[in-house]
Length: 96
Image 1 (cartoon, rainbow, N blue to C red):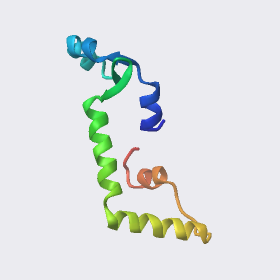
Image 2 (image 1 turned 90 degrees about the horizontal axis):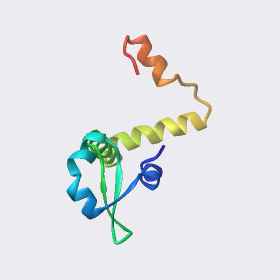
Image 3 (image 1 turned 135 degrees about the horizontal axis):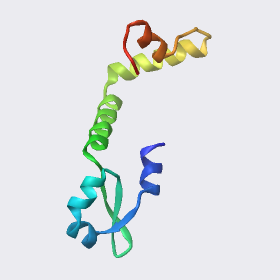
Image 4 (image 1 turned 60 degrees about the vertical axis):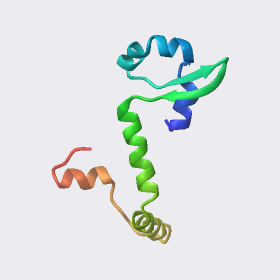
């Protein structure tokens, strides 16, 4: 599920209720769409989700990595055979 889809499905919580019960929401470890007067005003994300999002943004800003990905996609479109990442990791004794 994409982050956008997760946010669209996230429970909505009013800003005042979120403020009053913040510790409870933090313990639940779920994403929430925080609203003010029924309109989206903010998002609460668990720490791990926020870190993952930052990692994704960093990867998207890495020009060297994007170049490698583009080269791989071109090779695949030309018919190059590859292996699954999970298979490669298994060969190296690492799990996915």
